Image: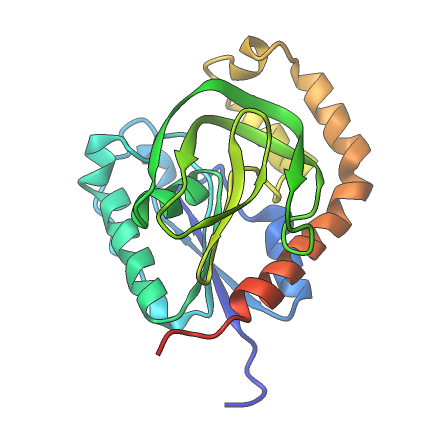
Length: 243
């Protein structure tokens, strides 16, 4: 059918992790944007809930977003993480393109045969990411907040990295990202207000530093987010669907 905009579904695995700037970039690329809340806000401290996910074949792209929990938590794998992995497999089988962000990128790795485990060095703050394919994943500082890292799924190609962790991989019509391209100052303020475990201080940073750096980089990051979405649409979404 001509004249119908493609649809992207953002899976908000927790209420604090929204699509923010990433949603705006997809809108600018001509997508209709929808979102689905996975773990309700009142279940943050007991997140092993049963979830009935929407039909993945109703969308052109599905984007699992971040979350505070590990993707390998057994109680979560027995409930909604396992169900979301099944959704991602069904989506891939149907030719739906996938873009995973941080927890969502780790979820893609775990779903398609890679592994996820605690990293020796967590990354919090702005890190320079070295990309082999800047036409898909632009170089430059990207925001990080993670304690785990993946090993690549079989057949995946790593696209970007820091000295501490793989930062991007492509597998068919799926792109996994370890960093947070969606971050803006409003979203970060919410995360900092919810920093109950003192993650930022443990990383040797303070809240004002992170907010100031995020504000300073806003003019540089915005065009790189648009370039990332454009590269994803062109080089990942635009590849042939499986027969």
